[in-house]
Length: 258
Ligand SMILES: [Zn+2]
Ligand SMILES: [Zn+2]
Image (tube, rainbow, N blue to C red):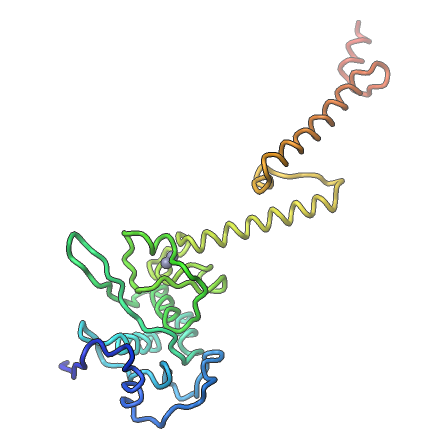
């Protein structure tokens, strides 16, 4: 159980020398290895210009972010969570280190802890460490004072991952509540409505729409449309009212009965 505790706070500028002095591996060279996040196939993760430290057997509050990251990558690699495994097995370049989010309970600051008891937790941590992020701002949930992280940054990896939800929302098991996820759904619905509208324009004999289809149009456009429909209805009504010509049942019938 007792383990050599390295000094804390060595995750910044010193990580390069730390990484290359730890493993004793031959020096890693090659400046283009970040491309596609594939390494040399030796099963070690790359971090910065060297190797990530070897995974320790356990981590505690004294552990560096780099050790924490190596530890969880190893735990994921030894897990049976297929999707998380795919992420760690197909990539070798660590893009960022796990760093716990700190939040206040009462007047006490608490650092979030990591766990991979559940599949979605393992996926979220693997993505945080290894996938390139696409967002510049944090999601609504991570911006909230209620946020519990667990990761320091809010990272979304585009539509192909977690439906665009950030890794913290994915970790919490409610990716569908992430504002990025909702944003994607809204965009897709808007696109669908635009497609339906386009289809209607191309097939004027089949004019149909629902109230939803009208959401993206200006009030002035809808008024114009309402005017067109109203004048068409007026025209039909006046045609129907013309004696003799109308095939409509009611007025003719009544006349006959009279
Ligand atoms: Zn977030
Ligand atoms: Zn989120």
